[in-house]
Image (cartoon, rainbow, N blue to C red; front, side, top):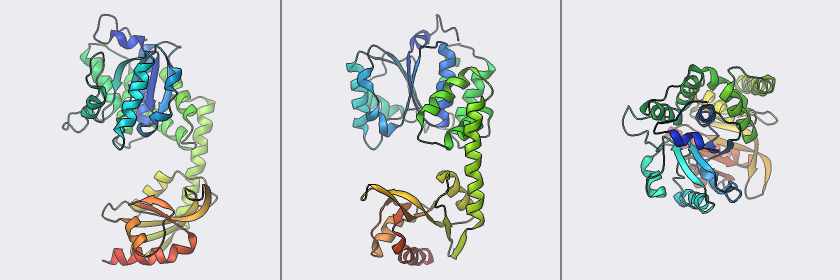
Length: 329
């Protein structure tokens, strides 16, 4: 527990509910905050900017709340506004918004920052602006003259590095690998934040989660070894029946030189409300609108967006021909 008495952050010690985003930045910063508060009765809930409408806000009453790494939903700011309104309607008090995304967006939602002991910041306000929620919390403590130990600073370092996609720090590596094998499981995030708030090393449960991710990485090696080069920067891989970390796998393929990846695998098809084997085309080239290219060829997409589009296996060759033509200019 950190002594905040007599500082501008005194009320931070009263926080009894932390709502955090489930990124490595969010998990490590939440862990640091739990360590600073130092009590066992602090609730912890993970979410995303676009899922705050799923939070059990109506179950909360009279809570002292800190938000961590939570941005305003830029596609639907009203969702965030409704979340804050519901929070206030339950007699809950917002104590801190420890977020680096956009101070202006939060001001539009909150109306003012009155009552906040830590205010949101904007990472785009120059090179010296905080780039992670961990850095926002670190600077708030420093400004208040509050000193913390090496363990807390290591959590801040992990959070800050993770926001730059650097997972080589001690805590960053452990948290990233432990989450990745079951990315949708927020109970893991809660366990990790609570554990690393007080512990330096991973326990057996966390090590088992990491072992699951190492098995996924071995699948990546098998998939990469069997990849097919179709020409014009198009690379085809098969992931059917294999657990993968899609973000990492696609990044590996792009770094290997693929301009467009055709990945055969199982995915959810919204129109059919079921999973089926299909081909997902992806690219890191923002100039390529794969959705538009595929539609123009007469193929009906099964889902996706500009840089990622899913098609039926039967439509794969027609989609490849259209993408190839676009790549050739």
